[in-house]
Picture 1 (spheres, one colour):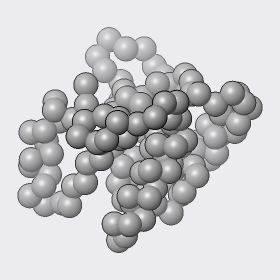
Picture 2: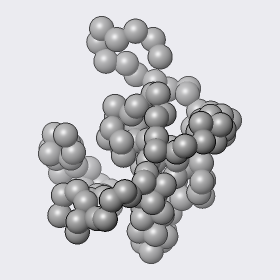
Picture 3: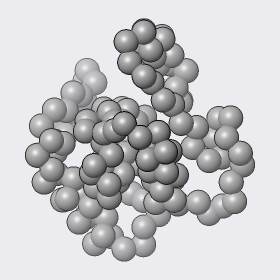
Picture 4: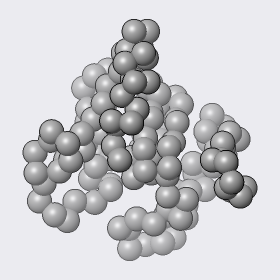
Length: 130
């Protein structure tokens, strides 16, 4: 899916905010990557970009796997993000991480953050509660 469906919204937001979009390695206009390339490695790529930009913390908007990436980034580097908007994340938190206990502890750490957590979820029409 990517960003094209959101382009009209981005165009309007650019009038008032500084918007930064990132093509993850191996997607969009970015260079090809050598596989395997884990979600944790993508998290480090995003961290590097945000730290280079400075002037954070940032509001992160992630779609699908990008939403999961932002959750992991917010747990590992809480100073970089002040708010998250997650569009279509995988709620199973399935990752390439072989240690499921580490996945579970990351989910607990994210839910403990007073500024994130699961206070505001908006389901699509016809979907059951999370």
